[in-house]
Image (cartoon, rainbow, N blue to C red; front, side):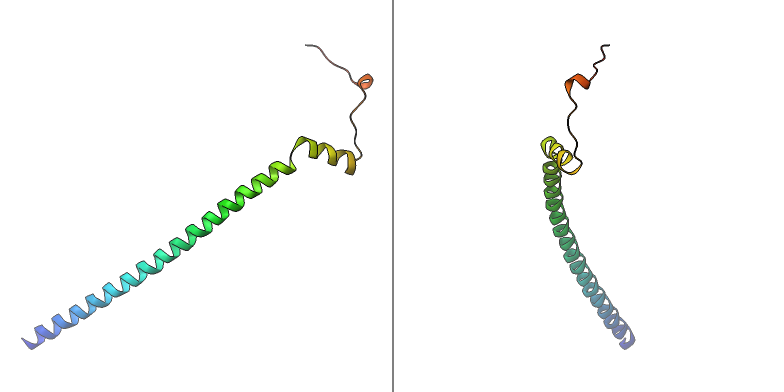
Length: 86
C-alpha cells in the first residue's frame, strides 16, 4: 500500500509540474504574440506613411520640376511635334 501511495504522490507531482510548465509556456507564447502584433501594427503605420510619401514624390508637377532642374529637359515646341491620325 505504501508503494502505491508513493507512486500516486509521484504521479501527482509530475502532473503538477507539467501543468505549471504548460501554463508558463502558454504565457510566454501569448506575450510573444502580443509583441508580434504590436510590431505588425507599427509596420502597417510605417507602410502607410511610406505610401503617402511615395505619392507625394511621384506627383506629375514634382517629376516635371526635377526633369527641368536636374536633367535640363524641356517640353518640345509645337512646331517640332508631329501628330499621327489613325
